[in-house]
Amino acid sequence: MKSSSIVPGEDPDFPFLGEYDRYSFPDPMEAKHDSIIAWGGNLSPGMLLSAYEQGLFPWYNEDDPILWHSPDPRFVIFPRTLHISASMKKLLKHRRYSIKADRDFPAVIRACSAKERPGQDGTWLSKEMIAAYIEMHRLGWAHSAEAYDFFESDDSIESATSGEQRLVGGCYGIRLGNIFFGESMFSLKPNASKAAFLSLAQFLFNDGVRLIDCQQHTNHMENLGGVEISRKEFLVMLYKEMARRMATDGDKADRRGNWEGLINSD
Image (cartoon, rainbow, N blue to C red):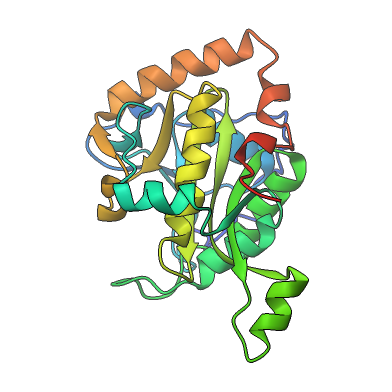
């Protein structure tokens, strides 16, 4: 998909791919050390699903064309490496936050976009990225885990007694078969994003997920159990899982919308 004409953002001349259309990217197995495998195209559902199935994901600045990455090494969390600290076990046990799934996906991705991050000027979550993943959620592919807490204001007692809550943390990603591709998270209160992510991770691993893709190393995800594996190792696991998924009714499982097992309270 690399071409001589570089168009910032989505290429208006590239065809829209529906969720059952597919595009063949350059093989990341044949890449050297460069994370960028291709550029261009758009963020239509078929394009995004093609990328994830082939081990790529979009990540770019607003002034750039869409850049499709497959980093080496890859940062992932396995069931055996997931780390829940003693303090987080206590927080989850006492249900400091109410954890929900897919209650307000648009609010989660917009909060991820608005969150200031050290050393980052602006956001990689452009309006077109937000719109694309909201559409993926509408179609049933993208999912969110959310942490809620009671409002804090001058009338907090009234808010608490009425049961009104606000979104204070969350994360989102895409599940394909037994692999979950984590995208981003945010937190407005201490440990809220951790509570949402760890609840999601436990649910996914109990439901047969083999790994959570964290894409690239961060200290935050390392503290939660992230480890580096080679791009080749990641792709071999991915391709085997995608083949297994194709041999079963994988789409139905990936697109189920009611993750009741994740909810920790009413």
